[in-house]
Every structure is written in C-alpha cells, then in structure tokens.
Image (cartoon, rainbow, N blue to C red; front, side, top):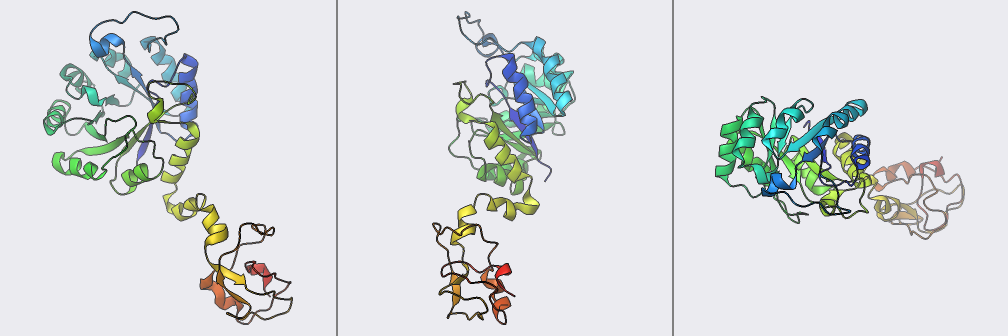
Length: 322
C-alpha cells in the first residue's frame, strides 16, 4: 500500500524558526508532506481577540511562499489547512492538495472554494455524521475527495480503524487516517497494512518541551522517525521488530545452551551437556558471544565437537563447533 505520511505542525510553534525547523525535521523523519494551519481567532470564532503581551503571533499568510520554498528545497510536499475561503487561492499556488479540518466539514463556502481548485481535498471526519460526509462528497466530488477517519479527542485514547473500511464501503471513496493518538506502532501499522489507509496524518512538534496547544497529541522527531521506519520496512518487519525485542532475542528466547561445562574437543549430546534454554542477563560473557544456534538448527551439533571450552549456562554459537 503506497501510504503517504503527513506531519501536521499545526500549533506546534512559537516563532517562524520553529516552522522552518519543522520542515527539515519532518523530511528527516520520513514524512512525505509537512502541513501548516492558517487561521486567526476571527476565522474560528467570528470576532477578533485583543493581542496580549508575550502571546504567540498568529500564522501569517505572507510566510507561505517562503515555507513552500523551503519544502521544495528539502524535497517534501507543502500543505496548509485553510480555515477561511479567502486563503485558498494563495495556498493553492503552492500546495498539491488541500486539507479540511473536522470542524469545517460542514463549512460550505470553504468546501466550494476548495472544489474549485480541482485538486484532491482531504477531509477529516471527526464528529461528522453521514449527512455531513455525504454533503461534502457532493460538493467536492467523489473523485477529488479523500476522507480521513478521525477521532476528535486530543489525544485520542481509542480508535476503531475498522471504520476506515466502513467509510470506503458506504461512500465508495478513498480513506486515510488523521491520527490523534500518540501510538507510534499499532494504530499507524494497522491503518497502513490492514485498513489500507492511503494517507496517515500525525501531529508533529520540534519543540516538545513547550506547552503548545497541540503538544499533548503530537510526536517529537525521535518517535515520528521510529513510526515511519517501521511503517516502511514491512518487507523486513520481523527484523525491524527485533530492535524492540532486544531482550527477548538476546536472553529469553530458547537456544542451544551448555548445561554443564563442555571441554574443548568434546562431542555435543542433547540432554547430557546441552539443551534448549534461556541464558542469564547478568553473565559477563553475554551478549558479546556470536549469534546462538537455535533449536531448529540443533542437528548441526550431532556430529560436531567443541573447538573451545564452553562454560555452563552459555549458549552455543556457530563458531564454537568444528
């Protein structure tokens, strides 16, 4: 499944430096797109809020060309969610597709303006009912709309990713996943490989130490990178999992282990001088020794001799046998 990852910066910034840092970091962390949000207090609530000293400034439309140039420089797609129809024309000059927040799925003037761009429009479905979704599809068109299954809880503690398949079945359109969980493994992995989501959007912050409005449901670069590494290493996903199963593989998974000292030149005998056991973590010679011989390969010991003294409790390695 050719799933694209969107790093949503949202409100995770204080200065424009944070915005530009986010672009480079998102690219380094494996995202295909980095997304911003353009809105003012008046766009959301209908009236202007007096500016307070030390309060973060609002996102300025004048920043968009420079942000888009930076995206092009590092080879990551630029996106920006418009919360006002008047912003669409400027954003459309730079964005290959558009995004509608869950709150705006019923904002008809915005949907109509986005439909006029003839580009793909991702529409989040948090708190939406089927009427909302049907109306959005009618305005934007079933060939241009891309629904984004979403739970509007911040952070989301429960998601039902089978709803992605339900939305596909009911509406016959493509469906992605706007993920407000902080899960870096299960939810995105299921969304990509089982629900076949074509986009996964995740909030992203390069300033996790700062209490921004979106911080609690965002991933810092380290976790975002771990998520994308797992998602795009499926052909080696067993090996990839081993990074996180280190203790199980190094110590606890059964392997051929000496149950009594095996002197150099001795033959191996199952049940007499070796068996299938774990090894202890505190032993000073582990895990410096080479990879163990696993039970399924124990037949290799049948006619072999030890080429060195093997202490009791140590696993038997391929370079221990002749």
